[in-house]
Image 1 (tube, rainbow, N blue to C red):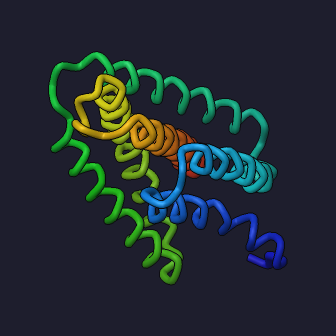
Image 2 (image 1 turned 90 degrees about the vertical axis):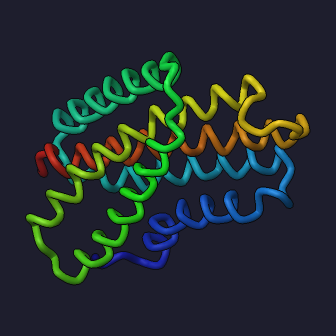
Length: 184
């Protein structure tokens, strides 16, 4: 990965924005959270543009359409189900943590088989997290998730919910691209 300094900044900046938004949640205003989210989305778009240069346009479009359909179906399921998905969300979060650990290990092992398994698990995890995150946003909107929160905190929670859904979609798309994308 012969990245320049700017390449490393564009690659790692999205992670920094997510960490800032998560750790400084109580100190930031809703306006600041929204500004960070918009800058995060722009930088993610820039970093994705370099990734997408590696794959054929037909495989990018196919993976994007598949991710969109899966995301949409799970969002509808998460919104319409009467079952509480809180315990399901915890399981998906544990799967995400395990997947991140496996990705770090695979950075050193460089195993194609392990990379394939990580991508399969990633598709399942981010598909499940989509339903959970939509239900969580629905509960926030209905005032059920965090009783007694102020309007400003509810706005910030909504922005974090949007960030979670954005991350679910982007990661689902990237996992599908790793599985099915054809390189140029």
